Length: 225
Length: 246
Image (tube, rainbow over all chains, first blue to last red; front, top):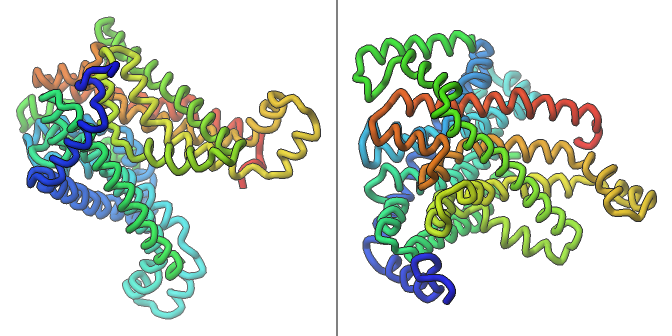
């Protein structure tokens, strides 16, 4: 071949690495670790971003602060910056990884949830107010369900983005997960393993989005939009 | 209230920094000093400029490539499957760090590698935005343009581009934002110059002020770029071509 196996491994070498990754406990363990990091980070950042968006939506006094100061700042703080900061503050490990991923995802959650809140149907809110004066009931039974499609769309986007960030975070600051596997393979110049992990990621993210999240979203939209 | 938040944050930073060691959280003054260095000191300025021009070049290239792909899929529906169901999902889900690592293996660590990585990460976003714009073009407009002249370039220049302007600006804006976020990813893994290199050097020598200064410099470029270049451009184009966007 024109290129050495280190630069561009042949498809057979990559398949072999893929196989090794699949059957070894190491492969499964790291995949599970990565999934865990992604889920926890998505949950944490969705909570924080969502709360910020809700606060900005209901309390006009903080709206500018959240959307025009905090939001752009968090949005432009580079992911690697967060990762190396986490590394310096928390050392290598799951905490650093989750911290870094969450920090990168919070602006996404904030902007998307705010968009959902802004698109709330005013007539629905009025209807809710006509039914009961209890604001909690209004929120739980009218506002929240009409947010479900947006919440789901947000989570779906965050899930996709989280994976990319997770790989980078695990590479720099993790001691388990697929990013960590890529780091090891990179140090051993095992390019076919790198290809294999990338293929696993692409396949996993694409199929989850296409076969699980997309149908769920159409179901949500049919019911709540 | 917004400014109060910023003041509050700075105050909190200053107070915290007094109680924590230098390498965990340096004082705001030290970071500010370093931040000015990045723009003033000739040693650092070279790195700053290198990073800036790489981001700008990547945004332009990504918009061009994404635009061409979107246009090709729009003009020749046969190719739509290839572009939208194979190329787009592939580029979209390919992890950014994957490109960075592969570029580090394939290319010598210089400008080309960095721009390569950034362009590949940004292209799917541009592709998606511009194809949205193409899809929103009224068929009647296209017919009208075709009735005026047979010269394709004139049609593109006088009808197509203005109609696409909002979507192009959106693509540019998104790419610029993401470009700065990933600028470091591509530089950290091997470029011998640029802010990423400065950052890694600062991290390995536990030089927290420089490290934080680099992070803040990027925030500044992002916000400055948006406010000074992109938003005014968007506003001007939107006024000229109102009606293109519903």
